[in-house]
Image 1 (cartoon, helix red, strand yellow):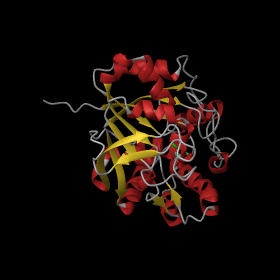
Image 2 (cartoon, helix red, strand yellow; image 1 turned 45 degrees about the vertical axis):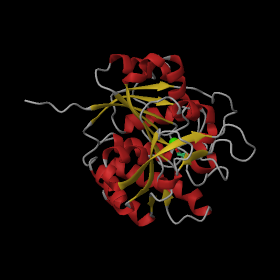
Image 3 (cartoon, protein in one colour; image 1 turned 180 degrees about the horizontal axis):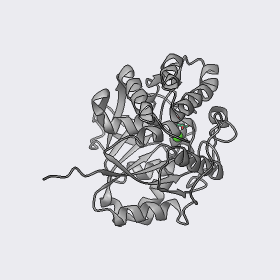
Image 4 (tube, helix red, strand yellow; image 1 turned 45 degrees about the horizontal axis):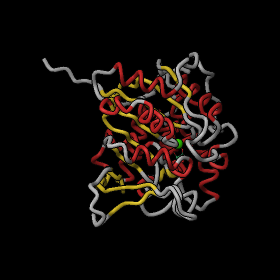
Length: 316
Ligand code: BDR
Ligand code: CA
């Protein structure tokens, strides 16, 4: 009798409303065996996003360790995003307090341990700056073979959102993104090309609120908060960035995915942190990345609603 093996997963991020929603989704995926949560400075300081990660783990009853990662990018000064995510990095609904101790291991030690102990290749879902993943690759090149895929939310082949050329997660730590990009590991990138199409409108998150379970109610309130700033920028809904890095793995059929050679701009006055794709193949470089560039928005929303429905009967 054959046994279906689960995919070991590490969730690495800087929660953040959309990171949190990505983790709500990831926790419902039966094929995933979530081995660890690791945090990285980005949307807010490391202390704040780590506290948020522990509160999310508590809300989702994830019996796994949360390990604190890098508190600053490899070369740059830290940029944070309180305009989107508030002073706590996860403003909005009240969350349960952490119910587990923080891991004594650093994120890099935790990632290395998960890889060393795993018989299966491990998927890393990176929804913040790629600082931890880059540090892991630099410290443990021997473990590269144990990584199945690195699925990232970051970049944008056509435009940025923090500067004209750069998306926030890549701009925070371009050297980290460059290291990951050139690692030779299987890469899937959900940049702004897809995430700015992954718009969840108020009527969509009212469907989530109407599910009336404790997790769905929190998700709806995260959208309420996230929308405050998005609306001020002229958006009619929320660009639901980070869940794309999860959903494009489990439902590739919903997404338009292309293979390109991608590089990260490290210098340049206007374009530091920009992700550049060779659409024509004229550089002669082989594709190094599956770039997710489009999606069926309605199906995306349906999957999100179905995931939130799985928390029926949840007690917080
Ligand atoms: C990315 O930046 C962060 O603010 C979000 O959490 C997301 O990962 C979008 O540019
Ligand atoms: Ca994020």
